[in-house]
Length: 346
Image 1 (cartoon, rainbow, N blue to C red):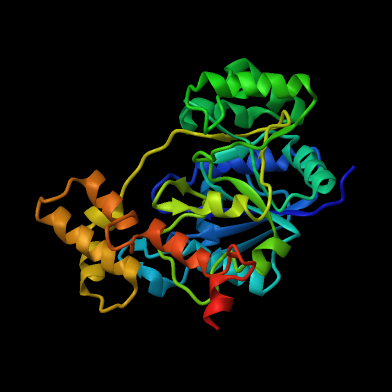
Image 2: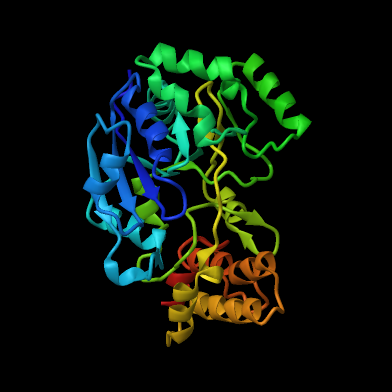
């Protein structure tokens, strides 16, 4: 049995109903191994006690609760910075040797901690994609699973509903993914090193790696950017850069993380108070500058909501959230001569 300790960092956002936490917490309560803790990052105005009283399930595992500062809220909605929060956790040594960021609409197989901690201890990879599966279920459809009392009952429920066999997040319905998985399973492999990394954003990272390469960008501000490793040619090629540095596989060792369907609401463009406050800001932050431009063009009808969102992430000035994500990381990742861009500049 592995003694490796894990940390799950769970973001509670103001868009989805907090009921999604019931499924995630229930799956953590029933884990067959308890070598983990949880850090809740609350991005709502509700207090911990208010949220917990709304839930059907309460945590039976060690956890910390961190509220986003009230000054970060523009009305009901926050200007969040997940990189800054992760940096705070690393700087204050609050995370275990391996950690993963989860959204509240995701939940785990009940033997996930047992299997992934054994895998990480055996292989020692710096980064491992966590085997995220795309379900077609909403919270309401899967809610009956909360009536299960044991790990075995929980697992049986996933099998009966078909959730256990949901496609890999990056597969969409790509036939070749299933073929590769079957061939590797025949060879008794429990991970895959892809040639191209798709869009799975749930991964484990070692604290040692995160600190060595300033992965959470201490000294920079990256608001409204999720914790992900993207690979989009000519825009955000972090996976391409990381591949030069360390192997990071997709784990698929029979234990999964599942994603529920959920509502979406892009308040950074449609909420009157939030957008007004952003437009009033005087800032030299390139990301907020891109957001302000996208808000104005959306308001004036020159951009659709989808196009405005894209402009805030990627633009010709290379100043969107994904643009800056890539540019900032390049400051710390080793270049071809073995030195980081930051070191060369110094």
